[in-house]
Structures are given as C-alpha cells and as structure tokens.
Image 1 (cartoon, rainbow, N blue to C red):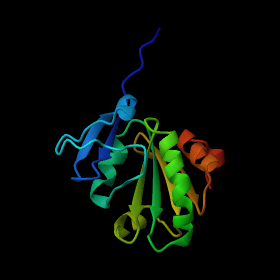
Image 2: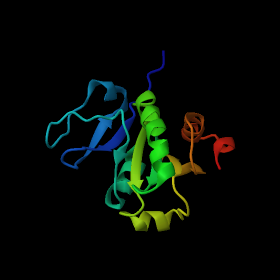
Image 3: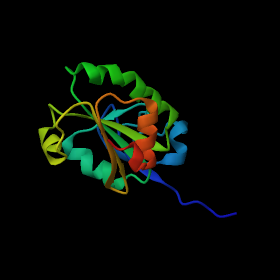
Image 4: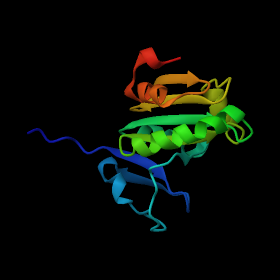
Length: 152
C-alpha cells in the first residue's frame, strides 16, 4: 500500500489574523492557531487580503477556491450560502477563501476582475479555472477539480 504525501494548507486565524500551516487531513480535528490557540474553523470560507493572498495560494497543497466579492453585491450575497455549503462539504480537500474587491483593489486589477462574483480556482499556485457570475455547487466542484470544461 503506497503512502500518500501529507498535504498542507495555509489558513488565516479568524480571531488574531495569523497565517497557520495546517495538515489538510486534520482539518476536522479543529486545529488551533499557533498564536492565540483558538480552534480554527476551516469548514467555512476564510476572508483574506492582498497581503496574505500569495502566501495562501502558493503555500496550500490542496485546491484553493477564491471568491472575489463585495458586500454591496446582490449576486455575491445570493451565492454566499452555496459557497458556505461547498466549503463545509469539501473541508480538507479544498480551501475556500474570500477576497473583498473593494478592500483589495490591487488583487482585482492583478487578476483582471471585471465582474463579481468571480470564482477562481488555484492549484500549486497556478490558476486552474475561473467563473464569473452566480455559480452553483457543480461549477465550484468543476473549477476545483481543474476541469477546463467547467471554466467560464
């Protein structure tokens, strides 16, 4: 039986803001933040900013789904529940993060975000898929699986 390599993800503590390296296989065990020792809830989307973006994307071994959104955006709010459900269902397999386009305009410019919500999937630090507009769970699954057929 072949031994599988440990996969890690970089996750931001929702309480103190520290980035933590977490064993993806142990996400259900509620790992604690290395700084404040608060359990990290990785079964929901985590908000990140431009200052953390590259470290999270490049330091995470599992697929990362990024939701580029804004608080005032109706379609973004409509999709939030589906994104929450996807994060819960895929915990430890996909890291789901959110980037507020108003608070992080440099990321919006860098990735040429022209409409929101925009979902982007990354693996090994590279973009593997993108979808603009409302998305259901099938779209999110296709993006994070790297399916170019699911890319819009």
